Length: 156
Ligand SMILES: [Zn+2]
Image (cartoon, rainbow, N blue to C red; front, top):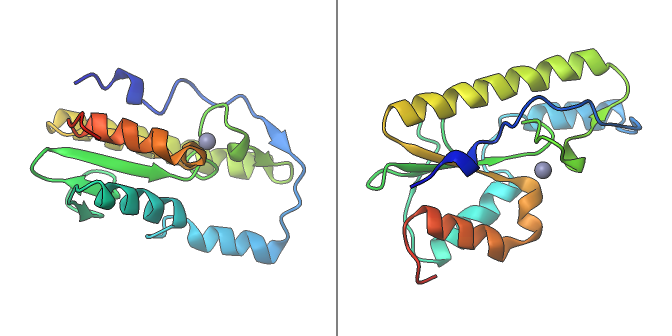
């Protein structure tokens, strides 16, 4: 199993920015959602995987990074990452607001470091992690194909 393609970090983001039209109320809503469970992209991925016949556990706190979807028998885990908050490299959805750029850059950078460390620790512990990015769910079938390959089944 090659995990080299699954590394979410190909270098730090180049600072793509968009106009900041998120009002303060909306922003605190975003902030509350940070790190929250059962986000919509995650639910979508879970549904697909479940429908494909895989069974899993959720949010294993005993594993580095608290992976969203855990396959204990296979020693594989899936993270479903929001592009913005986890700083998806080169992704439009990850564009930062123009105001308080340094604040957000620091936050996102810290998250990326934390994510990267979690992936490393998982690999060291004999687990294989992959990341499904929120933006990839525009093509759910491709995500399912990828996840199915990852889980070692080819008859999907
Ligand atoms: Zn993305």
